[in-house]
Every structure is written in C-alpha cells, then in structure tokens.
Length: 71
Image (cartoon, rainbow, N blue to C red):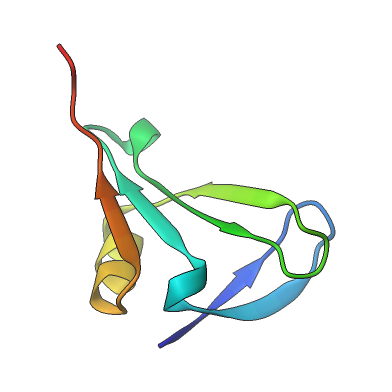
C-alpha cells in the first residue's frame, strides 16, 4: 500500500510505501503519532495520528510500536 505524505520543512509532496512509515500508539493523543524521513530533504517528520489515521496505517501494513506507561 502507498500513502500520500508531505514534508513541513521543504514542502515536498510524495508517496511513501508502508515500510517507510512508523506508527507509535501511546496512551493519549499527544503520544500517538506517525513518522517518516522526507525523501526530498532528509528531515525526520513526526505528525499526530488520530483514530482514523491509526486505522488506515495499521490496515495498510505500517509497522506499529505500542508505547506503554511506566506509571
């Protein structure tokens, strides 16, 4: 599966394969995000992932890391 993405640094727009994305699911909205490296400028991009984005990314085969609370 291929996902459309954009880089806030260079403003590039591109498509990324599922293997180029990482999804981290935390205990809250603040700790749930996806990340990738911009193929145009090399910047590491981190964006928040709401419920719908989590569904799309996990369904599309993106590798997922579940963050656990240490409390």
